Length: 183
Image 1: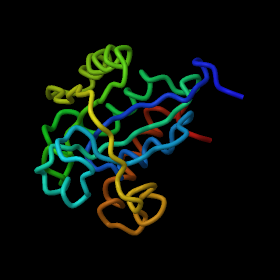
Image 2: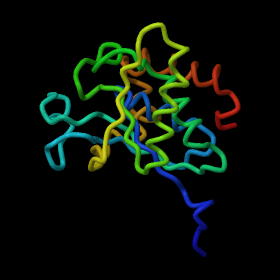
Image 3: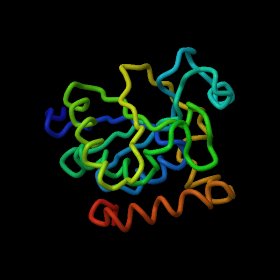
């Protein structure tokens, strides 16, 4: 049995600093079916984590989200994204510095492009500093190595960096989007 276009899973790609941190947020969202960490927006084919961390490939650490649009709209997804990372710091999220940690949205259709622009406008009143999130693409997606996938649920719980950074993001999600958190 095939899915109709209305019920077919949708895909979104965003970059908001460390992919371990953004992945943890979206895995908790109602309607999210899968979150994959990876790299996008660079010039080197099939980059490795070490290459991307070096900052010379042009890629961003990003996540590709597969979701049910009847439970979580693309607009809502972008609102969660904008609220759970800092879209006002250029090429930086907390202690992570470099273009690989930039805040970016990678629309996959003209409709997503329009909604990305609208999301940036909606987010402006929530921030005293200018939003520096870019809208980029099209670009090739490269999945990150297996050990980066679902990191928070595995190794991340024991990683001091993750313990310091992820819980405040999850608290923002629960506080601002309680109705969007899986039960």
